[in-house]
Length: 260
Ligand code: NAP
Image (cartoon, rainbow, N blue to C red; front, side, top):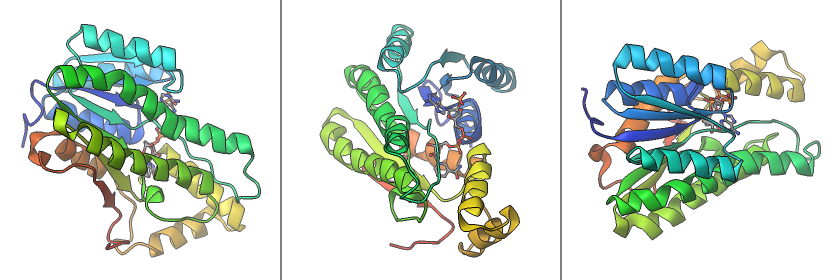
């Protein structure tokens, strides 16, 4: 299927690699124009060039840290001047694994700032334009870590629990303005983040990386990691009119690990 997002413009934070890049590819394949954000301008520009060449859609870039409220406001104002954002994918995020006692208070602050407060910044800057133009869709990249507990990454999990909570509350506030808000909650997705995640958990548990990876894979019914493209297809669904009555949901992509 193609053309499901034709005429739409999507802002994807953390769109230069990993899940964000897969969402950008899937959105471009469906005809969306893109505004991609990440901090590293070189990776971002290279990704945008490849997307333009491959899909023939408009791809703008905004290299900034989503924790920086002023930079986010400038990014949103520039996007508004070019016609506005119809779909916002809040995807930028970081992971850091520690035992609870080894996390510093600063670790908690860092994870909360990037994984949650940045979503507040971007959404508050983009939402007024979305409402003024008659509606839109907001897709938050949370995690299964936003739905359940995990040992040795409590600071990450609470930041994602906050994002799931915001998804529910905001969905209620803006539904009458024709803005839907949903979250995607994947289990381990094969990206740079997952490579670091498995290595950190191996170190904390005193296991080899191979043993830690085997343990993770044995814990999920499908016995494999999530592919970025599998997350991207859910983001297309939630961004498009096909999900027009789906609102306030935090949808697990976890290979059947949880069934509630
Ligand atoms: P990734 O491979 O590490 O990519 C992260 C992306 O976010 C990059 O484009 C990075 O670019 C950007 N980014 C990071 N911090 C940023 C900041 N402060 N401001 C702007 N951009 C920033 O991560 P991923 O695995 O694709 O994860 C994407 C999202 O899915 C995250 O929210 C993550 O928590 C969530 N998630 C991941 C998994 C997983 O297993 N991989 C599972 C569930 C949920 P720069 O470094 O250039 O800024």
